[in-house]
Image: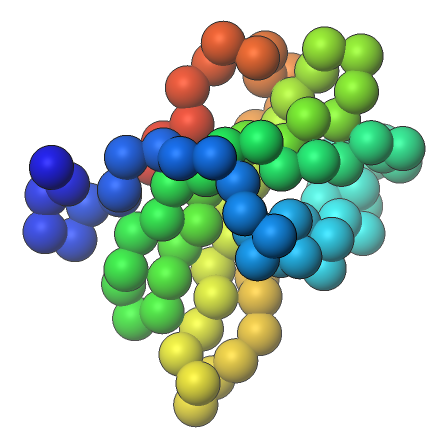
Length: 98
């Protein structure tokens, strides 16, 4: 059971999570200095704050993964912001708050 204000347990990525990844891909590539042919969300966790933080594990091909923290604002302040990127992750690295 998640702690109030804490991140939820990881679950399989949904179409909505993949759409978020598709939208922020260029920003992530710029931050990482890499162009990714593959950019497929596999699992995610979320945390409700003044909006929602999404912690997303993304398969970038070649058995490599990146972890993203993406903030989605409330309706009065919409949009997505990549808050953090963790590079050089593996398939077994757990996704969670960072």
